[in-house]
Image (cartoon, rainbow, N blue to C red; front, top):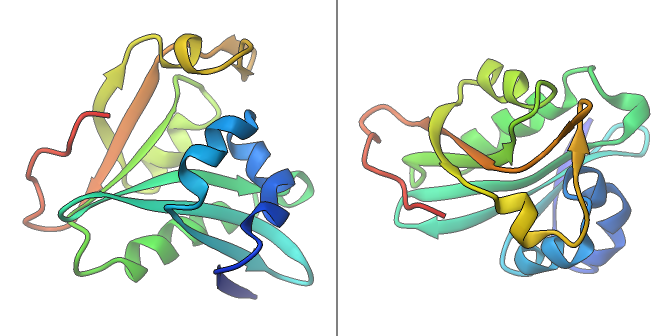
Length: 157
């Protein structure tokens, strides 16, 4: 198993990125300014994009595991890789997700806690309704993971 930082041809990973954020125009908003990481294990299995949002604040913008390889710990492995990779400069790692029973428990199990909510985000920024776990996503729920001593307020998205 290997995790590589992808420096070129990031759009080649779009099919997998669209599992984590299903509107290409939204992925385009952060792909070039973010660091793209790909996890390989006998082939491409997972990707994530991380952006710097402020001094000591980073955001996990996209995390996607290829469908046949989900629920095998690869997503958690990428979260832990990102957390370690950005230390010590990262005081707070944010992740924004829908209010979904599929994703919230995953991030909570990875050490994230509620930070804030952006009302109507999915209604205002996506050109079609987004459904996950049988529920239409409306608000963006931000979770945060903070380093010891890193409890400064994260910026509101």
